[in-house]
Image 1 (tube, rainbow, N blue to C red):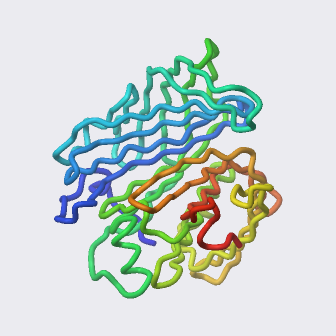
Image 2 (image 1 turned 180 degrees about the vertical axis):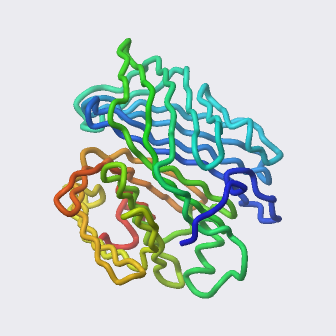
Length: 327
């Protein structure tokens, strides 16, 4: 996956597809305070909307969530705000600031406490630790799974590792981020939530110098493997993701993920992820029922410990079972 330049941190020309989207995603986790976030804003000018979701990991097992939609009939890369939270590009490909002041819905992911509300505030800054890698979305549509993927999750994509500073406040408590890292991504092109048969997406940071990101996505034309590793001061593409999962009693929620990621140089990276908690994000498109299980995980890699995301997307049948068996 090549390194992308600053122009891809701005809006791309909107094409004719009614599902055209340009979206921004960030995640963060600080093991010192046991707090973090995952958040996404997507602009869909052909549908006339800008929608956003912000989810904050609170200490323990609770998750605070804000979700909102507003009208947006033209592509924008500056008015990235909705529902009381805002993304600000301070320096392309280097620094972003995220702020929030909003009422949030709080759920206990362990199921021990009843849902409630809280006032959520945040002022955090992402600073890049490595260049942005990805695909600019140009050239041919490819064949098979590659062509199918471009029509359901986007033509262009970038990912980037970074360190976070700032604070998150909820329930009258302020949590200063002391050792937080995470990745961000940006996608442009058609986005159809009901399109993939499944995916396994990983976002992993091991200290300031080693980072992983990528996806194995299932399409009607087969599985596509994409990704990257930043190590020893340079990037290499991931060519294959071999994934083995342990599941909770419901048969859907992953509790552990073992990954063997083979890069373009033939190196095999072995990562073992213990899932600390899972936030389910449901989508419904027509008759398709989709769930994205966002798993916050502690990872071990070559004797070191890191943190990040193991995200599983499932299409569900009428009984709530994955249409594609979980490996």
